[in-house]
Image (cartoon, rainbow, N blue to C red; front, side, top):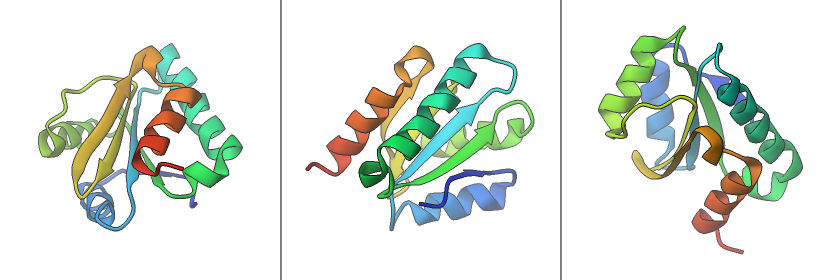
Length: 120
């Protein structure tokens, strides 16, 4: 697992969507001035740190919705999921298989999404 990679250009976003054909991607839309986003950020890192067996099967990327607003809008346009912040999208083959926003983003929901994709 390579950690949470920040996407700042449309080219990076398209590269990560292309990577989803080989490895599923958790794409996290983060607002730097939002309390629920801070909680979601912590949940994602807990998932990555405390559940390495599940999380190592995925790639992780983040789009800051204020600083990279054009990338956030591009995510919505390309994937067809209405924007929310915070928001996590599980992408495989350039399609959203699962998504959650606000208080539904917690370590247990991420583990459950991962387990649905890769059942034990």
